[in-house]
Length: 286
Length: 316
Image (cartoon, rainbow over all chains, first blue to last red; front, side):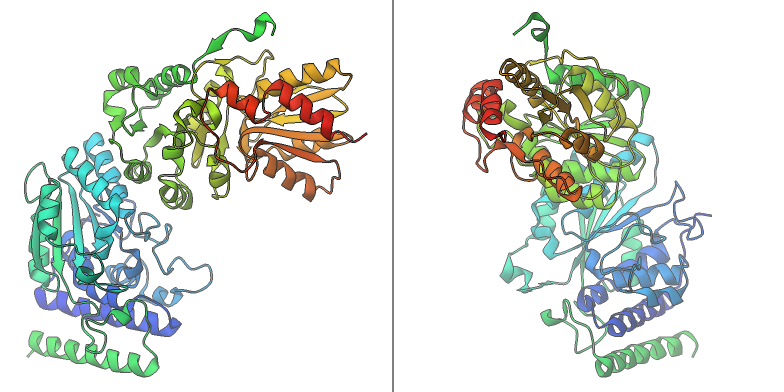
C-alpha cells in the first residue's frame, strides 16, 4: 500500500545517522566511492523516504507512487542505504555495493528495487524528471516527481533547457532539490564557475524557489511536503548543506569528493557517528 | 532513366502522414519536436493528436531526456530533428538515457546523408550511423523509399528498445522492385548477379540499381542488396552477397568509416571471406555545399561513379 511515513524528528535524525554509517561502511569496504557528496545528501533522502514520498516498498512500481530520480547519481550510497532502511531490500544487500554484476553500482542502475532509471551523468536527471512529470500530467495522474541535483550540476546547460520546459508546461508536481554543498571536484563552485545568485536564476526561469538548511530534517520535510510552493509552477529547494557532513575530517574538504576512508579513518568516522547516535538515543529515551 | 523511376515522393510527407495513423492507433505515442514541426510535416499530427504533440523548442538534449522520462512512464516517444541535431547534439542523452536504460523510443532525423547538402555540413549528417551503431541496444533503420519508410515506422512503433530512423529530404524516387515482409535486420536482395555485389542503404539503393544496369551493359553480372537495417546488420545476406563474387561494393551516404561498409567488412572478415570489399561513401571528409545529385557525383556516388569504381577495382 502506498504510504508516507511520519517519523518523529528524533527518529528521523537517528535514521539519517544510520544511513551515514551505511555509507561509510559501503565505501570503506570497497575502497571506492563518493563519500563527501553522499554524506551531504543524507538528510535530503531521509526527509524524502521517511517523511515525504508516497511509496510502497513492497510494490516499488506501484503506478500511483511518487517518483524519485537521483540526478547526482554519484551520491548513490546514501540512496541505497535509504532504500534499504525503508524496506525496498534487506540491509544486508548493501554489501553488494561495487561487486561484480551488482545492481548497487557506483551510480544508480535500473533494476534495483526503488530505482526508476539508470542515472548519474550530470544534467540528465532533470530532463528525464520533466518527461515523467509531463507524462503524469497528460495521464491526469497526481503523483509527484522529485529529483536531487548537485550544485555543480547546475553548470550543465541541459539543466536549464529542462528548467525552461518544466515552467513552460506548468509542471507543478515536479520538485527539484539542489544539494548546495558549495564544493565541486576542483573546488568551491563560486571559484570554478559561479552559480550565484542561484535562487534568482531558478525564479527567473519560472520556478518557485525556497532556500533552507539541508540538514534540518523537520524543516526539509515541511518544505518538501508543501510543494508546489506556487500553483502552476515547478518547485526547487536549494538545500544548503555541508559536503561530508557528520564526520569532522571529511566535512568541507574537496578531496573527499571521490575518496574512500581507509580502515582507520572508517573506524573513526563510525565512532563519530555512533557518538551522535548515542546522544540522540539519550535524548529520545532519557 | 525509364518511366518507372519518375514517380517521386517527399519522405517528410510520408512520415507526417504515417505518424498520424500510428498516433491515432496507439494513443501512448507522443511526438517530440525541437521547433521543426513544419519541416517534419507534423502540423496535421499536432492538430489531430494535439495531446500527444510536444514542441520542446530548440533544445535537443532536453528533448531526448524528456523522451526517456516519458518512455519510463509507458509512452512511446518519437523524437524529431535534423540529423546532426537529432543524433550528435544529444548524443550522450541517446546513449545513456535511451540506450543504457533500453527504452522504447524512436529518434527520427531528416537530412540524413547528403540530402541536406545545400545547407552545408552543419546541417546534414554523414557520421550519425557510425556514432549510433556503437550504442548497445540501438536499432538503426535507413529506408530506401516510401514503402520502406512506412514499413520501418510500423516496426519502429512495435520495437522493444531504442530505434534510429534516418530519413532524407527533398523528392526521392520509389524503388521499382516490390518487396514485402519488412523485418528489422533483414536485407532485400533486389537483383541477382554473379560477378559483383553492390550492397547499399537508403537513397544509395537507387544509385546501386542504376549502376548495376550500366555495368551489365559492360558485360558484368551485378547483384544489388538493399539494407534498410544498418543495425543489426543482415549478416547472412552479406555473406551470401560476398560468396563466390569477384568484388563487393558498399555504398552509403556516410563517411566510409563506421557505417554500412565497415559493418559489412566486419561480417566478411569474421566469416573468413577473402573477396575484396570496396567501400564507397565520403572519404573521411565533411561534405561540401551543393545539390544532393551534384555532391553524389563529386564523391563518385552516382551511377557513373559507382560503375567507374567497380570497373577499376574488379580483379581481373
